[in-house]
Image (spheres, rainbow, N blue to C red):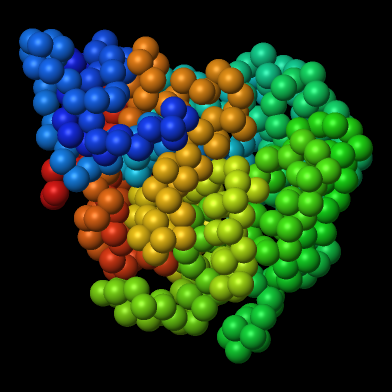
Length: 453
Ligand code: NCD
């Protein structure tokens, strides 16, 4: 249905153009030509539109730079039964994401040039959006010995992380942060003090107690956030904190920023939208056709869904800019790894296809402006990735035509049978969301078009 080679000029007519990098939020036209943005601004006169241009009427729709996801799991190589580069990038296109950075918890791990090359080749062959690999901090992600960070940089990684596991050894973390000074790329840490997790499977609190499940305290995250901030302060290196989930973490980052520590951080849609109550079957006032589900293993994720107070603090941190960006942590899993007891289930949620719909609730509820939301999905992650990514986060004339067109008010019901992702593991199955991607373009090619089917 989607023609990946479609590359004639396209005119998006009468959209609300939200381009936070240029401070634009106004109705106008976007014209793409030869894979680039020819113009994105005031309505064009017919004489400015080349012959043969394909026109997309976009009244009531939002046109924005394509979303950039700093943190997702594409599972290739090694876990193709969970996701592939083909299915993961198709899911991204459906979600309005045009650039993905994929985590190295693959098998083998992305910890040397050969595996980076493999991911690049598979992406060249199968991906419908841009894919940039993140290299491991330690060899095999085993936490014992630093990976060849320089080799990985030359091979083209955009950051380093052992995500899925923390960089547990403080000396290795210190060393890797020191290397970021020369390499100019951040170390992304998954903050989890294992000694405090004690086999926990959800947030510590009354809900975990009521369900009889072992809890993960907020301090499991905050203790390592504190350690890492102190190491970043000492080394001057560049720390990026993955998937913050607690009010305390937001405070720690806010204070560190005031001291001038070189830290950036992200929050995930699930931690802005869902609470630990979902493990009890509670769905707030959301409309859901699937009904409440106790012990729903699709709510099991690392870091765990937390309390309403944490969600509020994360939303405030995002609005304020203490949190630089939204990243999905799209973690697809096969059915078998979730159709088990809560304790045995894998951690992770499939997020790419529901991200926009869930995040738009923050805009509809007046918690953040549409422009701030788009900023945190485009300009924010591009800043973490560095100046060469700025061109993907704007609709400025001459930049690659990577963009998303979405209907902010379209209501739709999540039906995982329609997912492009192999991962159907989302607690949002059957939930009605408001905000739907209509068209996604990469390099001026339509990589996704919603035909309402
Ligand atoms: C991630 C995965 O499945 O790779 N799961 C998750 O719950 N976020 C790894 C991880 O960060 O734990």
